[in-house]
Image 1 (cartoon, rainbow over the protein chains, first blue to last red):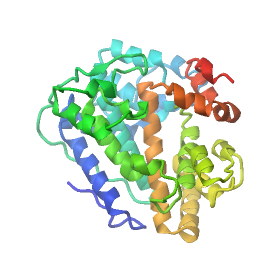
Image 2: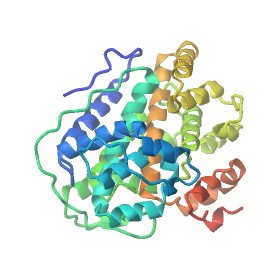
Image 3: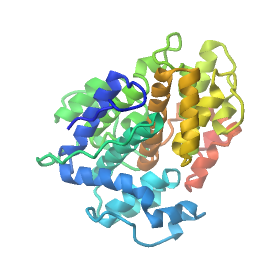
Length: 253
Length: 122
C-alpha cells in the first residue's frame, strides 16, 4: 500500500511523501518484537485514544492517576498495552516513572514498551501532518505476514538516563552482534543527544524514527547551520513552532 | 535552539512567545506561526482553517507544508521523550537553565513528580 497526498490542498514535498510511505509501510511489517497485525492494532488504538471516556476524565483531572476504570479500547490489544498507548496519546506531559514501572510490572517487556512508543509516535506525527495541511488521514495499512525477529541489543544498558535502557555511542565501538546495531553505529557517527537514543533499545526504531524526523524537521548538520536556510521557514521560525508545540505538550525535555 | 538561532543571527528574538506571549517576538510571522501550532494541537477546526489560509496567503504553500511538518514532528517527539523518561543532558540543561526558569518550563518536570535537577534551580 502506498499513501498519497495527491488530493491534499497543497503540494507536499517528495521527500516527505517518501518518508511517510516508508514509515506507514513499516507499521504493517513485523518489527523486532511485534508482528504486523499487532503493530497495526497499536496504530488503530493510537487513533482511537481520543475517543476514550476514561482518558477524557483523566485529562481533566488534577490527579490523573487517581482516576481508575477501563479504557474504551478496540479489543485487539491487552489492557496494559491500551493503557500505554492511550496515556501517551492523550496526556503525555503527565507520564510518570511510577506509571512506566506499573506497566512493566503488569507484564510489558521494556522492549515491547519501546516498540509501542515508536509506532504511536509514527502515527501521531503523520496524522498531525495531515491535520495541519488540511488533508484526510491515511487509511491504516494492511498487516503483512512475518514474525518479529526478537533481538535485544546487548549494547543497551540502564544507566539512569531514562526509564528505559538505551545504547550509548561508546557501546557501539568495536564488533557488534546485530545488523540493527551496526546500522545505528554508522548513522549516529558521533555523540547523539538523549532524544536520539530514546528508542535505541529497539535500534531499528531509533534509526527509522530519526530518518523520518530529519525529513520533516532538519538533518542534524542543517539544524545548527544558521548561515543557510533549508526550508521555506527559517531556523528561527522552525524553532519557534517547535518550542510552542513542546510547551503545549508540557514537555520538559 | 531558538536562542542559538537568535545568537547566531545577532538578532534578539523574544523567547517568551513559546509560552504564549502575544506578538511576533521579532520573528517574521511569529504570531501567525504560534497560532497555527496552537490550532493544529487544538480542536477548533475553523481556527485551524483560518490560520492555514493566512499562512498560504502571507508565506506561501511551501511554508505551510514545512510548518506543518515541524508541528507534526514535535507533537510526536515530545511523546517519545516523555514516554521513555529521558533526562535532559547536563550540559544542555546548564546552557538553558536561565531560559527555563524565566519561562516557567521547570514546572513541567515538577508536574510529573520529578525533581528539577539541582543545576537547573537558578
